[in-house]
Length: 133
View (tube, rainbow, N blue to C red):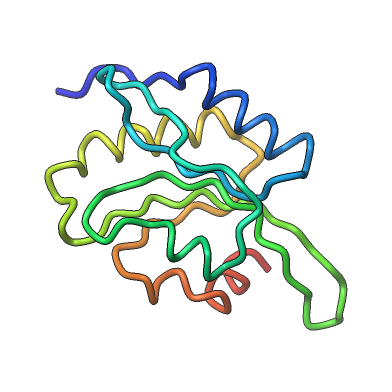
């Protein structure tokens, strides 16, 4: 059984910074040294390629990312995504990260695009735009 999930103060600050300040577009979270506590692994203004490169090949992560894109009509849009990164080598971490994913959905009710990605191609930019658009 998984213990309740908590966000560290630094995690809450990073998510607030992402949503309010708009100086960064990505927060990558992992479980820290304390059981059940999510801590930021990275926060920054990442391109799509940098985001993909920041994800470990064999460990789960939770990602909140502001996707910038243009609609078919040419209008500029921004949409927040919540991504559960669960590559094949991270199977032992799945239960804990699913609980963290659920906790983040509740903590970030205005994020409407949620997805689980097990392979990099599931995070293809055009696919993310289609989900957000």
